Image 1 (cartoon, rainbow, N blue to C red):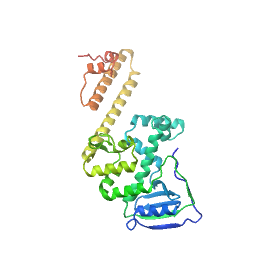
Image 2 (spheres, rainbow, N blue to C red):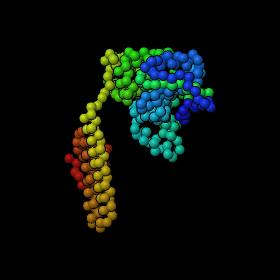
Image 3 (tube, rainbow, N blue to C red):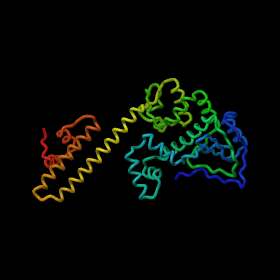
Image 4 (cartoon, rainbow, N blue to C red):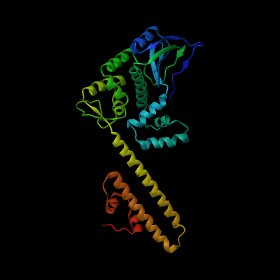
Amino acid sequence: MVREAIIEKIPSSYVLMAGSLEDRSLLDIVTEIEISKYNGILKITNNSTEYRLFFREGALIYADNSKDSLEHCALDMIKNSGIISMETIIKSERKKNTVMKTLLETLIDDGKISIMVYSKIMNAVVRRHIIKAILNKNSNFIFESRINVNEVQGIKPVSMNDIKSIEQTIARYPEETRILTDSLYSEVISSEAATPYLSPRKSFIHSFLMTEYDFFRFFSMAAADFAEKKWSLKSKSRVETVLENIAIYSFRTFTVIVLVIFFYLIAMTQTFDIPNDNYCRQSMFFLRLKTIQSVTLFESGQKKSVKELLESGVVRQKDLDFSKIKVE
């Protein structure tokens, strides 16, 4: 579904302009390309990444980088934005192998991602690349002419006013721009009264997807309010991150151990004589109930009694009968 801009190279590609962004702004370069109505690619290169801006008859129609495809960036944004659950993504991941489609196509076909949201995500990815390209002030640029550059379906061309506006935002709030560009998936801490366009306790990109704003306008408003301390981003310290990872891996290890014991008991049950079968079955159900209690304690932080588990429907009366555990 996602297709990159198709480039038709001329036999001997030639360079129309080259230089450094330290000497010339991106706005000046784009203005010259627009006036001359060039077809081609503007490559902005630093030590690690090359950003490529695609022009068709002088209009900026697309942008990407040398590391990640549009589909990869769009999927990354979908997974980390919080607009759909990880459970849905996992189910679609399993399904895509049977229907011979990409994960992105599967999510769209199943109605998990609307065409409108999908288009909004793709345009946000392209505009984020442009912001990152502008931020690389010490980069070199080169503009290569091409016979033709085809449009990419769903991507809205970036106007000269858009470039001018976002350059002004970056000039006024350079540090805030860098932080926001690298923190699209961080949780917003804000009050609706101060910043009504932001959704508290949601990711920054989630807030954007829930509005009708263009990405550049939304980003510029957010950067200005961020500079004035009207809102902030929730960040985890290194200690919190380490502790969280330890808790996750400890829980996974515990689950694996429980499963191994569970299947071991099942296997052992088959080898006992009839008089011992009831004892093994009792042990197996006893272990199952204790495991459920442990998992509940880990997730909620509160230890629930057998009676509470029974009333909530997590365990059945039949399980209690087999385990010989009495309800108090």
